[in-house]
Length: 436
Image (tube, rainbow, N blue to C red; front, side, top):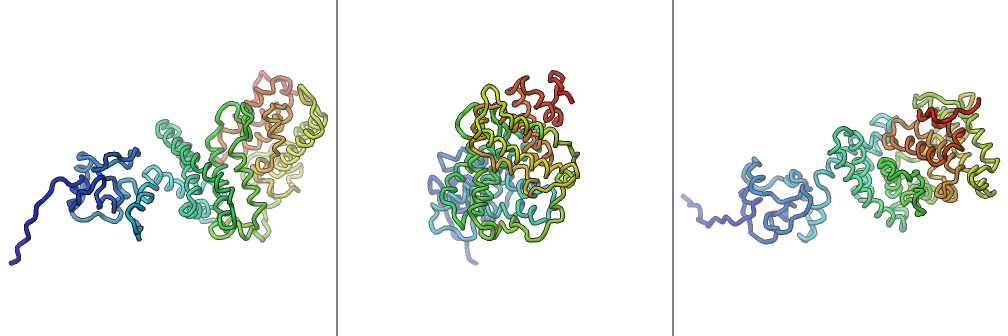
Protein backbone atom coordinates (compact mmCIF):
# COMPACT_ATOMS: atom_id res chain seq x y z
CA UNK A 1 0.00 0.00 0.00
CA UNK A 2 1.15 3.49 -0.83
CA UNK A 3 1.01 5.86 2.08
CA UNK A 4 0.06 9.49 1.55
CA UNK A 5 3.08 11.74 1.89
CA UNK A 6 2.88 13.87 4.98
CA UNK A 7 2.88 17.65 4.57
CA UNK A 8 2.49 20.68 6.77
CA UNK A 9 -0.84 22.50 6.53
CA UNK A 10 -0.78 26.29 6.68
CA UNK A 11 -3.54 28.41 8.10
CA UNK A 12 -2.03 31.63 6.80
CA UNK A 13 -3.52 31.51 3.29
CA UNK A 14 -5.93 34.16 2.03
CA UNK A 15 -9.61 33.78 2.90
CA UNK A 16 -10.58 33.00 -0.70
CA UNK A 17 -8.14 30.08 -1.06
CA UNK A 18 -9.02 28.78 2.39
CA UNK A 19 -12.71 28.79 1.58
CA UNK A 20 -12.07 27.03 -1.73
CA UNK A 21 -9.74 24.60 0.06
CA UNK A 22 -6.95 25.08 -2.42
CA UNK A 23 -3.29 25.73 -1.73
CA UNK A 24 -2.42 29.42 -1.41
CA UNK A 25 1.13 30.55 -2.14
CA UNK A 26 0.59 33.38 0.39
CA UNK A 27 2.19 35.95 -1.93
CA UNK A 28 1.26 39.50 -0.91
CA UNK A 29 -0.40 41.88 -1.58
CA UNK A 30 -2.37 39.46 -3.81
CA UNK A 31 -1.85 35.73 -4.06
CA UNK A 32 -1.39 34.13 -7.47
CA UNK A 33 -4.75 32.32 -7.38
CA UNK A 34 -6.67 35.57 -6.82
CA UNK A 35 -4.75 37.28 -9.62
CA UNK A 36 -5.35 34.34 -11.95
CA UNK A 37 -9.08 34.21 -11.34
CA UNK A 38 -9.57 38.00 -11.22
CA UNK A 39 -10.98 38.11 -7.69
CA UNK A 40 -10.11 40.51 -4.84
CA UNK A 41 -7.64 39.06 -2.36
CA UNK A 42 -7.94 39.49 1.41
CA UNK A 43 -4.18 40.14 1.58
CA UNK A 44 -4.63 43.39 -0.37
CA UNK A 45 -4.33 46.28 2.12
CA UNK A 46 -5.94 48.75 -0.31
CA UNK A 47 -9.05 47.13 -1.84
CA UNK A 48 -10.99 48.97 -4.51
CA UNK A 49 -13.68 51.41 -3.36
CA UNK A 50 -16.40 49.72 -5.43
CA UNK A 51 -18.57 47.78 -3.01
CA UNK A 52 -19.19 45.09 -5.57
CA UNK A 53 -15.43 44.44 -5.78
CA UNK A 54 -14.57 44.42 -2.07
CA UNK A 55 -12.62 41.37 -0.84
CA UNK A 56 -14.54 38.70 1.07
CA UNK A 57 -14.62 38.65 4.84
CA UNK A 58 -14.98 35.64 7.10
CA UNK A 59 -18.72 36.25 7.33
CA UNK A 60 -19.25 36.42 3.58
CA UNK A 61 -17.03 33.41 2.96
CA UNK A 62 -18.92 31.29 5.46
CA UNK A 63 -22.22 32.06 3.74
CA UNK A 64 -21.12 30.64 0.40
CA UNK A 65 -21.93 26.96 -0.07
CA UNK A 66 -19.42 25.66 -2.55
CA UNK A 67 -17.77 22.31 -2.91
CA UNK A 68 -14.10 21.53 -2.77
CA UNK A 69 -11.78 21.90 -5.68
CA UNK A 70 -10.59 24.52 -8.11
CA UNK A 71 -12.76 27.54 -8.95
CA UNK A 72 -15.21 27.21 -11.82
CA UNK A 73 -14.58 29.18 -15.00
CA UNK A 74 -17.40 31.63 -14.21
CA UNK A 75 -16.43 32.05 -10.55
CA UNK A 76 -15.47 35.69 -11.02
CA UNK A 77 -18.93 36.61 -12.38
CA UNK A 78 -20.56 35.75 -9.06
CA UNK A 79 -18.40 38.37 -7.40
CA UNK A 80 -19.25 41.18 -9.82
CA UNK A 81 -16.25 40.90 -12.17
CA UNK A 82 -15.55 39.09 -15.42
CA UNK A 83 -14.20 35.55 -15.31
CA UNK A 84 -10.88 34.50 -16.82
CA UNK A 85 -10.43 34.99 -20.54
CA UNK A 86 -10.10 32.17 -23.05
CA UNK A 87 -6.54 33.26 -23.67
CA UNK A 88 -4.83 35.02 -20.79
CA UNK A 89 -2.37 37.86 -21.50
CA UNK A 90 1.29 36.96 -21.33
CA UNK A 91 1.92 38.95 -18.15
CA UNK A 92 -0.25 38.77 -15.07
CA UNK A 93 -0.04 42.54 -14.66
CA UNK A 94 -2.12 42.91 -17.81
CA UNK A 95 -5.07 41.20 -16.15
CA UNK A 96 -6.09 44.29 -14.17
CA UNK A 97 -7.97 46.05 -17.02
CA UNK A 98 -9.94 42.87 -17.67
CA UNK A 99 -10.84 42.50 -14.00
CA UNK A 100 -12.15 46.06 -13.59
CA UNK A 101 -14.01 46.53 -16.88
CA UNK A 102 -17.51 45.72 -15.57
CA UNK A 103 -19.12 45.26 -12.19
CA UNK A 104 -22.54 44.01 -11.15
CA UNK A 105 -24.38 47.37 -11.59
CA UNK A 106 -22.89 47.77 -15.07
CA UNK A 107 -23.87 44.22 -16.01
CA UNK A 108 -27.42 45.05 -14.93
CA UNK A 109 -27.37 48.13 -17.19
CA UNK A 110 -26.04 46.10 -20.12
CA UNK A 111 -28.71 43.42 -19.71
CA UNK A 112 -31.42 46.07 -19.50
CA UNK A 113 -30.14 47.75 -22.66
CA UNK A 114 -30.20 44.52 -24.67
CA UNK A 115 -33.61 43.48 -23.31
CA UNK A 116 -35.53 46.76 -23.08
CA UNK A 117 -33.75 50.04 -23.82
CA UNK A 118 -32.56 49.05 -27.29
CA UNK A 119 -36.04 47.97 -28.30
CA UNK A 120 -37.54 51.21 -26.95
CA UNK A 121 -35.48 53.14 -29.52
CA UNK A 122 -37.24 51.23 -32.32
CA UNK A 123 -40.72 51.19 -30.76
CA UNK A 124 -42.79 50.96 -33.97
CA UNK A 125 -40.86 47.91 -35.14
CA UNK A 126 -41.19 44.27 -33.96
CA UNK A 127 -38.21 42.74 -32.10
CA UNK A 128 -37.01 40.86 -35.20
CA UNK A 129 -37.00 44.02 -37.34
CA UNK A 130 -33.47 44.98 -38.52
CA UNK A 131 -33.64 48.39 -36.81
CA UNK A 132 -34.80 46.87 -33.51
CA UNK A 133 -32.07 44.24 -33.75
CA UNK A 134 -29.49 46.93 -34.49
CA UNK A 135 -30.19 48.71 -31.19
CA UNK A 136 -30.60 45.66 -28.98
CA UNK A 137 -27.92 43.41 -30.53
CA UNK A 138 -25.51 45.28 -32.83
CA UNK A 139 -24.90 48.29 -30.58
CA UNK A 140 -23.70 46.18 -27.59
CA UNK A 141 -21.44 44.22 -29.94
CA UNK A 142 -20.09 47.51 -31.28
CA UNK A 143 -19.41 48.56 -27.68
CA UNK A 144 -17.06 45.61 -27.19
CA UNK A 145 -14.55 47.16 -29.57
CA UNK A 146 -15.47 50.84 -29.06
CA UNK A 147 -15.86 51.54 -25.35
CA UNK A 148 -17.33 55.00 -25.87
CA UNK A 149 -20.37 53.27 -27.41
CA UNK A 150 -20.51 50.92 -24.43
CA UNK A 151 -20.38 53.78 -21.92
CA UNK A 152 -23.17 55.70 -23.64
CA UNK A 153 -25.33 52.58 -24.06
CA UNK A 154 -24.97 51.91 -20.33
CA UNK A 155 -25.78 55.56 -19.58
CA UNK A 156 -28.98 55.42 -21.61
CA UNK A 157 -29.96 52.14 -19.93
CA UNK A 158 -29.45 53.83 -16.54
CA UNK A 159 -31.81 56.65 -17.51
CA UNK A 160 -34.34 54.10 -18.79
CA UNK A 161 -34.21 52.13 -15.54
CA UNK A 162 -34.70 55.35 -13.56
CA UNK A 163 -37.70 56.11 -15.76
CA UNK A 164 -39.24 52.66 -15.28
CA UNK A 165 -38.81 52.68 -11.47
CA UNK A 166 -40.21 56.12 -10.58
CA UNK A 167 -41.87 55.04 -7.33
CA UNK A 168 -38.68 53.59 -5.84
CA UNK A 169 -36.85 56.89 -5.37
CA UNK A 170 -33.76 55.27 -3.88
CA UNK A 171 -33.16 52.87 -6.76
CA UNK A 172 -34.13 55.53 -9.29
CA UNK A 173 -31.47 57.87 -7.88
CA UNK A 174 -28.87 55.10 -8.05
CA UNK A 175 -29.66 54.43 -11.71
CA UNK A 176 -29.50 58.14 -12.49
CA UNK A 177 -26.11 58.41 -10.78
CA UNK A 178 -24.76 55.47 -12.82
CA UNK A 179 -26.14 57.04 -16.00
CA UNK A 180 -24.45 60.37 -15.27
CA UNK A 181 -21.13 58.63 -14.57
CA UNK A 182 -21.10 56.75 -17.87
CA UNK A 183 -22.46 59.73 -19.79
CA UNK A 184 -19.68 62.01 -18.51
CA UNK A 185 -16.99 59.52 -19.47
CA UNK A 186 -18.63 58.91 -22.84
CA UNK A 187 -18.90 62.61 -23.70
CA UNK A 188 -15.22 63.25 -22.97
CA UNK A 189 -14.07 60.22 -24.95
CA UNK A 190 -16.42 60.98 -27.85
CA UNK A 191 -15.26 64.59 -28.11
CA UNK A 192 -11.64 63.38 -28.26
CA UNK A 193 -12.36 60.65 -30.80
CA UNK A 194 -14.25 62.93 -33.19
CA UNK A 195 -11.03 64.86 -33.80
CA UNK A 196 -9.44 61.86 -35.53
CA UNK A 197 -12.48 60.24 -37.14
CA UNK A 198 -11.86 58.11 -40.22
CA UNK A 199 -13.41 55.38 -42.34
CA UNK A 200 -12.65 52.73 -39.74
CA UNK A 201 -14.27 54.63 -36.84
CA UNK A 202 -17.03 56.71 -38.42
CA UNK A 203 -19.76 54.09 -37.87
CA UNK A 204 -18.98 53.60 -34.19
CA UNK A 205 -18.70 57.34 -33.53
CA UNK A 206 -21.92 58.01 -35.42
CA UNK A 207 -23.67 55.51 -33.13
CA UNK A 208 -22.01 57.05 -30.07
CA UNK A 209 -23.07 60.57 -31.05
CA UNK A 210 -26.66 59.40 -31.51
CA UNK A 211 -26.62 57.71 -28.10
CA UNK A 212 -25.20 60.91 -26.58
CA UNK A 213 -28.15 62.94 -27.84
CA UNK A 214 -30.61 60.42 -26.40
CA UNK A 215 -28.79 60.56 -23.05
CA UNK A 216 -29.03 64.36 -23.04
CA UNK A 217 -32.76 64.24 -23.71
CA UNK A 218 -33.29 61.53 -21.09
CA UNK A 219 -31.40 63.42 -18.36
CA UNK A 220 -33.90 66.29 -18.66
CA UNK A 221 -33.33 70.04 -18.12
CA UNK A 222 -30.35 70.94 -15.97
CA UNK A 223 -32.08 74.05 -14.59
CA UNK A 224 -34.80 76.59 -15.43
CA UNK A 225 -32.57 78.30 -18.01
CA UNK A 226 -31.95 75.12 -19.99
CA UNK A 227 -33.77 75.54 -23.32
CA UNK A 228 -32.50 72.30 -24.87
CA UNK A 229 -30.42 73.96 -27.60
CA UNK A 230 -28.76 76.39 -25.20
CA UNK A 231 -28.70 77.64 -21.63
CA UNK A 232 -29.81 81.27 -21.46
CA UNK A 233 -28.05 81.70 -18.12
CA UNK A 234 -24.65 81.20 -19.75
CA UNK A 235 -23.02 82.36 -22.97
CA UNK A 236 -21.07 79.12 -23.21
CA UNK A 237 -22.58 76.78 -25.84
CA UNK A 238 -24.09 73.50 -24.78
CA UNK A 239 -21.28 70.93 -25.04
CA UNK A 240 -23.63 68.27 -26.34
CA UNK A 241 -24.88 70.51 -29.17
CA UNK A 242 -21.53 70.10 -30.93
CA UNK A 243 -22.13 66.35 -30.70
CA UNK A 244 -25.68 66.43 -32.04
CA UNK A 245 -24.54 68.57 -34.94
CA UNK A 246 -21.63 66.20 -35.31
CA UNK A 247 -24.14 63.51 -36.32
CA UNK A 248 -25.08 65.69 -39.28
CA UNK A 249 -21.46 66.36 -40.18
CA UNK A 250 -20.61 62.65 -40.10
CA UNK A 251 -23.52 61.93 -42.44
CA UNK A 252 -22.32 64.62 -44.83
CA UNK A 253 -18.64 63.65 -44.72
CA UNK A 254 -18.80 59.89 -45.28
CA UNK A 255 -20.46 57.98 -48.09
CA UNK A 256 -23.39 55.76 -47.04
CA UNK A 257 -21.64 52.57 -48.17
CA UNK A 258 -18.74 53.44 -45.82
CA UNK A 259 -20.75 54.76 -42.88
CA UNK A 260 -23.51 52.15 -42.93
CA UNK A 261 -21.44 49.00 -43.30
CA UNK A 262 -20.84 46.05 -41.01
CA UNK A 263 -22.90 46.31 -37.81
CA UNK A 264 -24.45 49.58 -39.06
CA UNK A 265 -25.84 47.99 -42.22
CA UNK A 266 -29.48 48.03 -40.91
CA UNK A 267 -29.34 51.86 -40.89
CA UNK A 268 -28.41 52.10 -44.58
CA UNK A 269 -30.91 54.02 -46.73
CA UNK A 270 -33.21 51.66 -48.58
CA UNK A 271 -33.34 51.80 -52.37
CA UNK A 272 -36.88 50.42 -52.36
CA UNK A 273 -39.77 52.92 -52.33
CA UNK A 274 -41.51 53.31 -48.97
CA UNK A 275 -45.30 52.93 -49.37
CA UNK A 276 -45.81 55.10 -46.25
CA UNK A 277 -43.49 57.88 -47.42
CA UNK A 278 -46.38 60.22 -48.22
CA UNK A 279 -48.43 59.31 -45.12
CA UNK A 280 -48.34 61.93 -42.34
CA UNK A 281 -46.83 60.75 -39.08
CA UNK A 282 -50.04 61.20 -37.06
CA UNK A 283 -51.73 58.48 -39.12
CA UNK A 284 -48.82 56.06 -38.67
CA UNK A 285 -48.43 56.79 -34.96
CA UNK A 286 -52.14 56.98 -34.17
CA UNK A 287 -52.50 60.36 -32.46
CA UNK A 288 -54.97 63.19 -33.20
CA UNK A 289 -54.42 65.73 -35.92
CA UNK A 290 -54.33 69.43 -35.09
CA UNK A 291 -55.08 72.33 -37.43
CA UNK A 292 -51.76 74.08 -37.65
CA UNK A 293 -51.78 76.06 -40.91
CA UNK A 294 -53.44 79.27 -39.66
CA UNK A 295 -51.48 79.61 -36.37
CA UNK A 296 -48.19 79.11 -38.21
CA UNK A 297 -49.22 81.61 -40.90
CA UNK A 298 -49.75 84.21 -38.17
CA UNK A 299 -46.34 83.40 -36.72
CA UNK A 300 -44.74 83.92 -40.13
CA UNK A 301 -46.48 87.29 -40.50
CA UNK A 302 -45.08 88.31 -37.13
CA UNK A 303 -41.55 87.36 -38.21
CA UNK A 304 -41.73 89.20 -41.52
CA UNK A 305 -43.11 92.32 -39.82
CA UNK A 306 -39.75 92.66 -38.01
CA UNK A 307 -41.48 93.14 -34.67
CA UNK A 308 -39.09 92.15 -31.92
CA UNK A 309 -39.21 93.77 -28.50
CA UNK A 310 -37.44 95.79 -27.29
CA UNK A 311 -35.43 96.28 -30.49
CA UNK A 312 -36.32 95.50 -34.06
CA UNK A 313 -34.31 92.81 -35.77
CA UNK A 314 -32.04 93.48 -38.69
CA UNK A 315 -32.39 91.75 -42.05
CA UNK A 316 -29.85 89.08 -41.14
CA UNK A 317 -31.76 88.05 -38.02
CA UNK A 318 -35.03 88.00 -39.92
CA UNK A 319 -33.49 85.61 -42.45
CA UNK A 320 -32.30 83.33 -39.63
CA UNK A 321 -35.76 83.38 -38.04
CA UNK A 322 -37.45 82.57 -41.35
CA UNK A 323 -35.07 79.69 -41.99
CA UNK A 324 -35.79 78.20 -38.56
CA UNK A 325 -39.52 78.77 -39.07
CA UNK A 326 -39.62 77.14 -42.52
CA UNK A 327 -37.96 73.99 -41.20
CA UNK A 328 -40.52 73.82 -38.39
CA UNK A 329 -43.35 74.37 -40.88
CA UNK A 330 -42.09 71.42 -42.96
CA UNK A 331 -42.06 69.21 -39.84
CA UNK A 332 -45.64 70.25 -39.02
CA UNK A 333 -46.72 69.30 -42.54
CA UNK A 334 -44.95 65.92 -42.37
CA UNK A 335 -46.40 65.31 -38.91
CA UNK A 336 -50.03 66.42 -39.35
CA UNK A 337 -50.41 66.73 -43.12
CA UNK A 338 -51.92 69.69 -44.92
CA UNK A 339 -55.60 70.51 -45.25
CA UNK A 340 -55.90 67.63 -47.74
CA UNK A 341 -54.28 65.15 -45.36
CA UNK A 342 -51.06 64.94 -47.38
CA UNK A 343 -47.60 66.44 -47.38
CA UNK A 344 -45.22 67.31 -50.18
CA UNK A 345 -42.03 68.07 -48.23
CA UNK A 346 -39.19 65.50 -47.97
CA UNK A 347 -40.08 62.49 -45.73
CA UNK A 348 -37.04 63.20 -43.54
CA UNK A 349 -39.16 65.91 -41.91
CA UNK A 350 -41.12 63.18 -40.12
CA UNK A 351 -38.01 63.01 -37.95
CA UNK A 352 -38.75 65.82 -35.47
CA UNK A 353 -35.13 65.96 -34.28
CA UNK A 354 -34.05 67.11 -37.75
CA UNK A 355 -34.67 70.70 -36.64
CA UNK A 356 -32.13 70.35 -33.83
CA UNK A 357 -29.55 68.95 -36.26
CA UNK A 358 -30.01 71.88 -38.64
CA UNK A 359 -30.42 74.80 -36.22
CA UNK A 360 -28.09 77.70 -36.99
CA UNK A 361 -25.57 79.09 -34.51
CA UNK A 362 -26.98 82.58 -35.04
CA UNK A 363 -30.42 81.39 -33.98
CA UNK A 364 -28.93 79.87 -30.82
CA UNK A 365 -27.22 83.20 -30.12
CA UNK A 366 -30.58 84.97 -30.39
CA UNK A 367 -32.03 82.52 -27.86
CA UNK A 368 -29.17 83.21 -25.46
CA UNK A 369 -30.00 86.92 -25.79
CA UNK A 370 -33.66 86.08 -25.00
CA UNK A 371 -34.89 87.63 -28.25
CA UNK A 372 -38.70 87.22 -28.26
CA UNK A 373 -39.05 85.96 -31.85
CA UNK A 374 -36.50 83.21 -31.32
CA UNK A 375 -38.29 82.15 -28.12
CA UNK A 376 -41.64 82.08 -29.94
CA UNK A 377 -40.24 79.89 -32.71
CA UNK A 378 -38.80 77.51 -30.11
CA UNK A 379 -42.23 77.34 -28.39
CA UNK A 380 -43.88 76.23 -31.65
CA UNK A 381 -41.16 73.58 -32.03
CA UNK A 382 -41.70 72.42 -28.42
CA UNK A 383 -45.34 71.64 -29.27
CA UNK A 384 -44.10 69.09 -31.83
CA UNK A 385 -42.24 67.28 -29.04
CA UNK A 386 -45.59 66.50 -27.36
CA UNK A 387 -46.33 64.04 -30.18
CA UNK A 388 -43.37 61.88 -29.08
CA UNK A 389 -45.28 60.20 -26.28
CA UNK A 390 -43.68 56.81 -26.93
CA UNK A 391 -40.19 58.30 -26.78
CA UNK A 392 -39.71 58.09 -23.00
CA UNK A 393 -36.49 60.11 -23.08
CA UNK A 394 -38.39 63.27 -24.17
CA UNK A 395 -41.02 63.16 -21.42
CA UNK A 396 -39.90 66.26 -19.47
CA UNK A 397 -38.99 68.65 -22.27
CA UNK A 398 -42.29 69.95 -23.82
CA UNK A 399 -43.80 71.21 -20.55
CA UNK A 400 -40.48 72.63 -19.36
CA UNK A 401 -39.84 74.56 -22.59
CA UNK A 402 -43.37 75.96 -22.97
CA UNK A 403 -43.78 77.06 -19.37
CA UNK A 404 -40.31 78.63 -19.25
CA UNK A 405 -40.85 80.51 -22.52
CA UNK A 406 -44.19 81.75 -21.21
CA UNK A 407 -42.38 83.18 -18.16
CA UNK A 408 -39.68 84.80 -20.30
CA UNK A 409 -42.02 86.48 -22.80
CA UNK A 410 -44.70 87.75 -20.43
CA UNK A 411 -48.04 89.30 -21.38
CA UNK A 412 -46.87 91.09 -24.55
CA UNK A 413 -46.67 87.79 -26.45
CA UNK A 414 -49.48 85.83 -24.84
CA UNK A 415 -51.65 86.08 -27.92
CA UNK A 416 -49.06 84.18 -29.96
CA UNK A 417 -48.32 81.72 -27.16
CA UNK A 418 -51.99 80.90 -26.61
CA UNK A 419 -52.21 78.32 -29.40
CA UNK A 420 -49.16 76.12 -28.55
CA UNK A 421 -49.97 76.28 -24.83
CA UNK A 422 -53.60 75.33 -25.40
CA UNK A 423 -52.67 72.44 -27.70
CA UNK A 424 -50.21 71.18 -25.08
CA UNK A 425 -52.81 71.44 -22.30
CA UNK A 426 -50.89 74.23 -20.51
CA UNK A 427 -53.31 77.11 -21.08
CA UNK A 428 -54.35 79.00 -17.95
CA UNK A 429 -57.26 81.38 -17.35
CA UNK A 430 -54.79 84.13 -16.57
CA UNK A 431 -53.91 84.31 -20.25
CA UNK A 432 -56.22 86.35 -22.49
CA UNK A 433 -57.74 84.57 -25.46
CA UNK A 434 -57.08 86.05 -28.87
CA UNK A 435 -59.95 87.19 -31.00
CA UNK A 436 -61.03 84.64 -33.57
